[in-house]
Image (cartoon, rainbow, N blue to C red; front, side, top):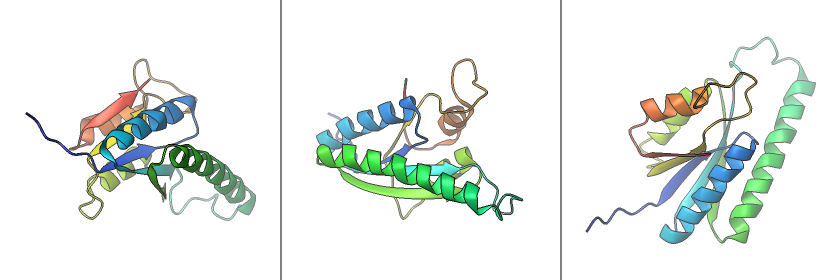
Length: 144
């Protein structure tokens, strides 16, 4: 008998329907294993971007992130699942895999939507989910 315990689940969020479906799946799994969910929002903005000086854009992005994370936290709280959040800036796929492999974090599973909100959609998978599937050393569950 296989006895694999899942204690920490990483869930990338971007506000899309697929990311919330992934969160719902992660909550279902977390309830079974009494695991913790860490939702992350990755901003695809380079650290030295020319847009850094435009505070109105930064404020809008921060408002959107707060709204998404509050909704995710409420959903987790309703289901008695421990919730953490993290925001990252830079290459989304790379940062997700880097966080997932962080030895301090020790994630057991990544649960993510098949596609996010990007304007250009790939035929089968989004570019971020495709990157994570092929780069991650821990299991990845893709939710449609």
